[in-house]
Amino acid sequence: MADEKLSLSGAAFAHPFEPVFDSRSRVLVLGSFPSVASRSSGFFYGHPQNRFWRVMARVFGEETPVSIEEKRDFLLRSRVALWDVAALCEVQGSSDASIRGAVPTDLPRIFSTAQIVRVFLNGRKAFALYKQFYGETGIGAECLPSTSPANAAWTFERLAAEWQKVAHWAQQDG
Image 1 (cartoon, rainbow, N blue to C red):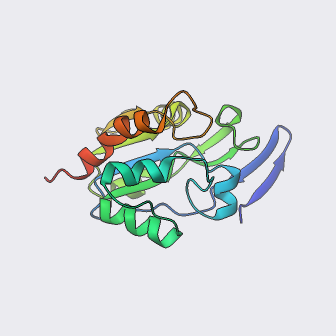
Image 2 (image 1 turned 120 degrees about the vertical axis):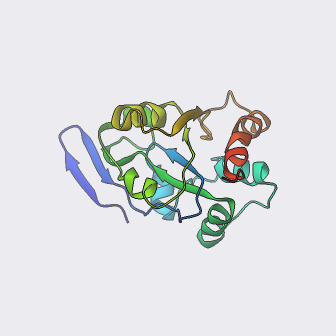
């Protein structure tokens, strides 16, 4: 699965999977780095308690996708690109707070192909890394509350209401 390396300060991991996007993608949703469960499952937001897929299904008015193929199809049909900010980092377990030595992913790869009009960051760590690595891209970026189960202060209903912005921007034409 993940390309694991050992370093003096902890376990370093390379991002184990490719981004999801195509030329029709309108919004880009970025996390920080895949969790242990995601790395094990081979796809984004693989922890069964992470609310990402349920929230996205709610805001787009669809059934929650289950398989990797269903999730990819859902994202592309919804015009949502999905990746993470860090391509390589040291991380302890799945803790965003423990991320050190992060190296950015190649976001220009997405920006040069897709029609991205808005970037959404899933949580504060992803937002901080995005600002650190990319600063101003000319495309508006907004931090959304994390869908992680560790973000217990946000109920599913509150998350869905806040994440409705993703559907709004993805469904705009022009």
